[in-house]
Amino acid sequence: MSTRHQRSSSGAAALISARGLNKSYGVTEALRGASLDLHAGEILAVTGASGSGKSTLLHCLSGIVRPDAGTVMYDGEELGGLPEDRLSVLRRDDFGVVFQFGQLIPELTALDNVALPLLLAGTRRGEANERAGEWLERFGVRGQAALRPGGMSGGQSQRVALARALVTGPRAVFADEPTGALDALSGEQVMTALVHTARETSTAVLLITHDAQIAAYADREVTLRDGAVGSGPAEAVGPEAARREN
Ligand code: ADP
Ligand code: MG
Picture 1 (tube, rainbow, N blue to C red):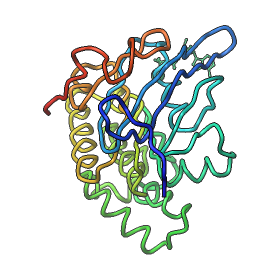
Picture 2 (tube, protein in one colour):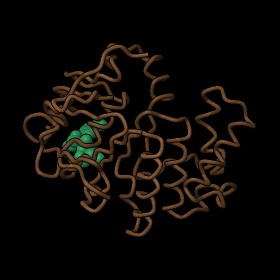
Picture 3 (tube, rainbow, N blue to C red):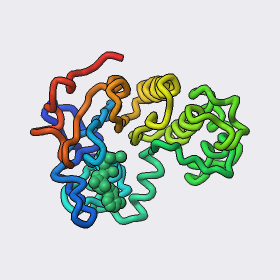
Picture 4 (spheres, rainbow, N blue to C red):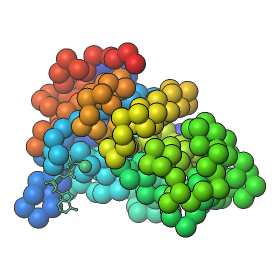
């Protein structure tokens, strides 16, 4: 459906390409000229100290927040040029988001939480439930299908949140410290599930973390400092930019 792609210096088409993003909150400059490419199917870790602008960058890339300056190209379209209703559809159909605390709907069961994005996109209840069940299975939490978030462990909740983010078949998943509130073992289980599924479905993942062990799951890592991504093009930041093996 797209006709235009941004090309990175390596020649591969970028799914999402951000250039020169600025975003201020009052006198705080959260982003100062941040540029970054996320390629189709790649797992990219974004690291950086607390307050360096990681969450703000994720919000701009995923169309949740509009930057004050700079551009975000997604599959040939500039997000800043899209009307709000088109942006909402894009967020619903093409992007999945996972936060540090899963932010599941507390009144709904795990199954209903995962089925919800499908229902919102017009899928019929029976099929939505079936697919939601399959995704719970994939993330090893089918046994928790009838539980509400309050009855699950943190790791189980995050795996349900991942299922919810992936159930619609998004092209990109944005995960903001998805293991930040978990113990090491649960964090590993969540990451293993995410990475395995992203590879299987060729979903691009932007993974924010300040944990080097978690960043090691990614293909590539960039670091934010004071609202900017390293120096020079995003592809060329640091020795950690080399492809990692899991
Ligand atoms: P990180 O995720 O790396 O910790 P953030 O993107 O959350 O960084 O924040 C970057 C800077 O912007 C911080 O100084 C933070 O306090 C500020 N900031 C972020 N969001 C807001 C907001 N909604 N209102 C005011 N300040 C904000
Ligand atoms: Mg943050």
